[in-house]
Image (cartoon, rainbow, N blue to C red; front, side, top):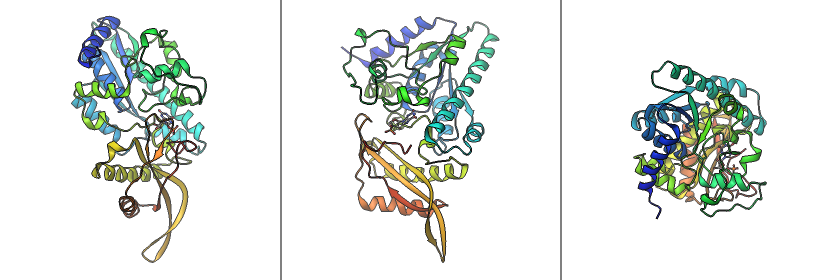
Length: 362
Ligand code: XMP
């Protein structure tokens, strides 16, 4: 008889037993539901001996890292450090246009900054009476990720979906996801550098993996989130990829392009929310095409970027269909984006299904 309220109690007891009364735990939080729920659970279990780290990679959405800080630190009482990595990420991304190279740079830079922070926390802990070493790493792995890691053989591998963790081997081995999964990342496990957590840090520090959500499905994590008093907006949030706007801007990510994509995305998503259809859509965003098209402003011809709106419906993120907006709403969205975002001359709506398209642009 699977009861979520029992789960919370049991899991807190299990975490306390595993970690003991001195050791410290570190974990990355993206602001998504999985990492937030995992972090809140840890905080309930061991308080400030859990250290959450959020890295702003400069490719987050409008004010997103600021919101993560307010929600996790102030509302949920999580011991959180926010690191602003914008400059270093964008410096390393300068001139880089190739999608997988962008992913790789973002992934590696993330690890560099996270490692630095882990070392800082470790040093600080040494000076705290009664506190032990940082010896655990929190991961918001969900049950579908476990299944995927065990059965992954390629993009077409069959995924087993029955709920029998008990019968599986101890699985905290091969799936050091770069970010706790916000979406389902089946095809990412083996072939996308950013979805693999480099083992450098694990080996160097001998961190053990702690995965309190590894027996849960997404809807169960949402239920858990509500019980832990996490705000409905966060609980129901669409997934957001680890590389952020980096996979939504075609080509080089310059500060100007990031600013434009952010503003357009903000208008698009707020209009979706105002129309009360956010929960009917699985994932939506405004991306940016870096070639320019002509537009007329007053009496002059201007060249501006093309914004690509994308909204899909999917149940498993393996296949997806474009969301069917009322056409008037779509036109109103396009009008506002062209009028309000400097540097945009056109807005298009991406009608591709997945496959052959993907959800992200890159
Ligand atoms: P695609 O674009 O492959 O996306 O159809 C499927 C799901 O995965 C997310 N996604 C990523 N998540 N790192 C992530 O953490 C990535 O590099 C990445 N690429 C895609 C995407 O947002 C969607 O939910």
